[in-house]
Image (cartoon, rainbow, N blue to C red; front, side, top):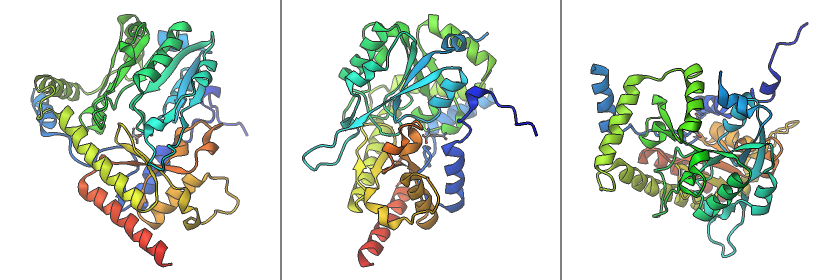
Length: 375
Ligand code: GLN
């Protein structure tokens, strides 16, 4: 019997959290706070723009061969297979939680890089670092100081920065998103990635963009032309019109980039409150529409699965969707194999949801709490 042929670089990346949990949520959930997508419609100005539009050698990859690419954990899970498929070797460095001493709720800002540990990951074979600020899944918005640290190492070791800024407009509490490309020495070595999915709440349109110096973008164009090839022109046209509208309204109360984060901040606060009420300690996100919560106090609710080495957070998330109808994503899905087991006490919720959806989630949690206290 011959074994199926599979490229070595694809080994171990065939499992996918989204395939598994999207199916679970579709089968069991009454309330889906799992996968990150708004359950509210994209704004009218955008869909109207779409309607109007309707009426009317791969150098980058070669550079990465045998290259090391640093990925900051926790990370959006596709970075790892993407690096591997490009022939690179991912090197992981975790954000480390420093719980506040005063008993206050943790914030995503309390998860930080250890400067010495970060520096130790850079060497002459490091070709790139993937940065994601605001970060999915924690909601961390990297500070100027933290970005400065990364920038200094990139310049020192001549490393490229792939800066995933798709949540750039979703920043709360008056915080500011800072582009690492604006720091000294970084424009020439940074590729900024943006997404209409997150920017205009239209995740199904699959329109995104990159911004950077032509020296780097010329290679991206080659990759794009020969892999993605094309995306729907009408969707691009509508997104362009969305940007033109936002440019006109920049900073004004009618601007979507002003309104959306304002609404999401309220939704965040609401979910923080509901989770805190039931003892599922939330880590308050500074940005994105995700929120990570601590499930360590729920261990006795979830039965052990015999002969399974499945981490607690996976077991918990599967049990919760099947028994409570509430879908969320296990945090360890956002870690490399080697570090997964250190972060199994958390799950991620998405709060880009209608008020009624969030209310339904809160009702499930409250009912659960009452059952716990009365049993
Ligand atoms: N980025 C979204 C999330 O993190 C969607 C992921 C996906 O569908 N692959 O949930």
